[in-house]
Image (cartoon, rainbow, N blue to C red):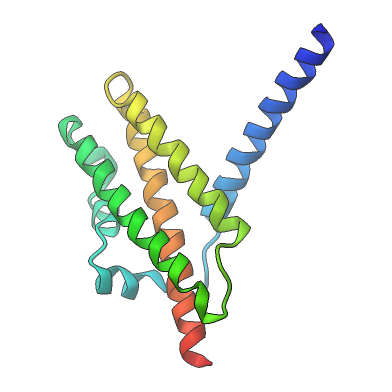
Length: 149
């Protein structure tokens, strides 16, 4: 009985470690061309402006507003990605699904740590914006490839 519980706990920890490592590895990769900028401008997404301002500059009382802004951008980007699946380019990739899960985990972590650990909350918000950049880049790449066809 104790061995089974130990195996389950170790397996859960290893799964969590794999998830975090894979998410961070995906976020570190960059494409040769920036496809996100035109998409950000065309859809008036706010995450790039927040990234440029810097998360260390965000006052504590504005962290909730920044999170809400990132959540709006997330909803728009996932909507666009989901509804361009009809372009015969494909739906969500495994990579995108992992990043979507990472966004949700970081959002929950940002909410929980906002009042007690603002630096961790800012780091979670920064990772959320990196996920948005990656999704916007994937959407821009999808638009480019469909316009070539």
